[in-house]
Image (cartoon, rainbow, N blue to C red; front, side, top):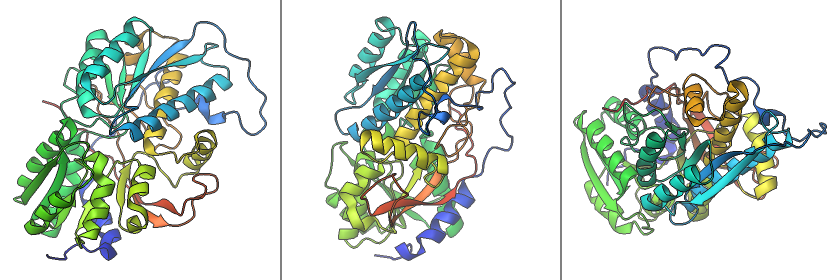
Length: 429
């Protein structure tokens, strides 16, 4: 086994990786006009803390927003974060008087991680509940199916971690990503780093579903384009024991192992690779950190690296996360931050446009940008709904006391290494 990427060189590796790979688009996105700029005062910024006077309770017809996410099955840890983040935003906004005097109301459905359940749930929320939009999709299988319904019915739908490159098309106008960008945007940095460093062998463990297959396509295309040798191991989505897959990769002697193609197993892949004595760098970004840490434990310190859409070092994230922990007794991961942002952005769109019609809201969203609490950068979209200004945060888990109130009793916290430059949006064919 070659030892080209040892943990002690992790900081240098990550810095070079992102610096070399995360070049942004050559042009800045167009600034929206005053009527469309939703990045000013967010209703949730003031909250209900600090002794401010309570606003009058909102009255009138509620504005209904769908929570469409995975609350059971392998993706439940992500889905619970989503539901909690959206609920916290609704509580904050309603506590400040609602939106133009109307209360927000969540309509919750569990997709169970299956496309059929996702489609049924979305149709019911549109036809029976009168939602103005829905958000929270984690599984790319569910995202691919429900995005087609959103486009047919012309109702805004927000992905959180559904990163399949097939979800969006050039004609998409009602589907929006909010946290995880398309798979080619995730894999580009890995390929650029390998090429820069002259590394020629890369392994991956992917899950056998839409996201894993999308990562595989991007993995093969990006790394094949630089002449790298690759080996991909395919595991079922519920898999928890990756020993056999890792032993196969160990024989391949990769310079790096990519675990992001199997989101439920990223933590186990990190810990089990260490148990096998594999000290090759393992990258498994975009997992729910609290859940991952429960499985990895102290083995994650100074070794587990994650990409996120939340800036854990920012004061506004820490204020938000402290209130989140008080309300839900949990660490506020980036899924919850993104979901809090979905509700906040929709509330701002309704308030500034004066519209609750889904078609009008989608049009407004495409012309707006949002400066959301805890987010790693501005949230805005391309014409087809891809993240236009994605700037992932790269963090490493350290053994340290978290900021006050953020994750009481824990002995770990993500230390932000850097925030990437703006990624160039992926354009579907």
